[in-house]
Image 1 (cartoon, helix red, strand yellow):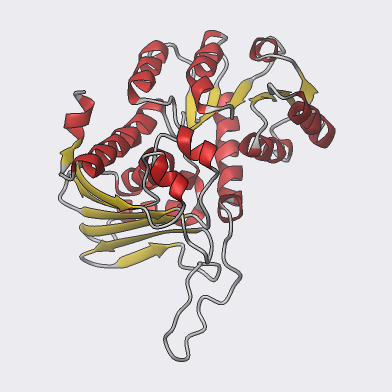
Image 2: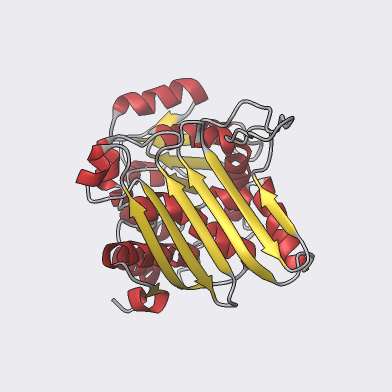
Length: 334
């Protein structure tokens, strides 16, 4: 098949490399406002370069990958749907939830599949965790812990446009908690602080946060996030049931150091970047998209899924700001 890529920044170039290695993908068509980025992709992957999204959609593509800036996501999603071309779009659907809801209304019932990029759904550990929960082998759940710790904060310009740590970072934890447990979040309570980069505080954001999520069956989920984790990129999940407990990310590249006498685990070089931690997950995610394009599988992460994670992020943002519990229905109603 022939796949178009819109946006060739860090993640777009990474997707181009991944797609170029998939057997199902015969050719790539790329476009980016910066001609140098498009030229580099053409040289590395033999991609065809066009000068606009309109030209890309007219180039006979079977599916498109939207890796452009967040502000461009709604228009590019809608352009793909108007052209009848399946769309993969990196999260979020839009900068705000109201914009995301408008996108959903515009594409609903159009019959064009849309997949939103939440790559943890394709990581082997999280896939196995979901299977364990769904099989009942853990028994009824009582506690889930989900962690995302970045090795260093992104630049000030990124922070200013990110929408805040809950919508930019924690949202991955929110999505994977829903996906693994099969439950919905009903209420949140969030705290946060600034112990590091001043520019994060100046942007009105927190660099370290914690959130307690109450799920619709009474399970408690604890989410921990930080922009500062000097030992590396740390993504983990613990799931505790009345019959068993399991963990995702408990492996030799885990960025933790044990101080127990005689313990050598973890012994590997810590993960230092999300592309290192999730290389195989990204490959599986885009392989799934080729199956969506081929019509052999439905979207594994819909706009509706992405919006549900977004409501949780908005609830946590409000909770942190007002120092109180917030229900998901409260933010939905705004």
